[in-house]
Image 1 (cartoon, one colour):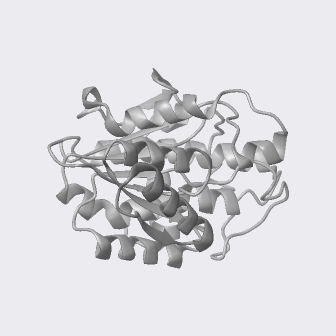
Image 2: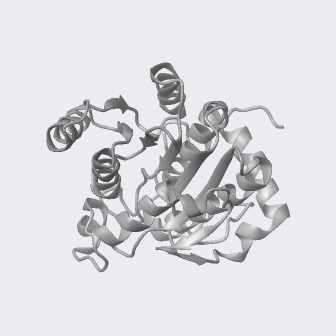
Length: 276
């Protein structure tokens, strides 16, 4: 890439997203920061400017639990830049605290973890796809998990047998499945789509509040995610799932063509986009 990358990172005010924003800014890239809280966005942007001697990154506030705000986020990004080299879909909620273990719904009436962890990223990707394609070769990196659960198409919103962990794992399988599907639909010469399990129980706020301890370092997850964004050896590599820096296999449903097509159709319907 002859120019500095322009990278949008969702969930950029904490944990992995914030660390990635700092690393890319230190590399000389332009980072676009998304978060839910403007004060934390401002603090992150100010810190990046101060620590790396770069222009203050643009910030975009949106609550991904409301699809209208996801659309507004996409429109704001399109209005702020005429090029987008990388979208890192990192924002999400875990299987327990601080977002609760009981079943909750998004602003649109969808099961909260499916809405935030999957549908928001799906819609944002669809809304930014023309800009990404126009910026070819571009990349989409989805921060997923080894924690996966088959989607129950008879009860996608988990109205029966709910648990926060089950909902989290289903949302992550949906994310990976959609990554594979988009890799089939979009030429890798234009946009590549890959997902990864960055590390296990990094010391992020989400992990520490729910579990009280961490296993892998934040640096481990950062290195793995940064590689998918930057590594020239991954040019044209699409539809893969990585466990940290090693290519791995997700749950079988992610590779089931019929299940992927069903999820894709359902996702378009749920976010209010026309069926293709």
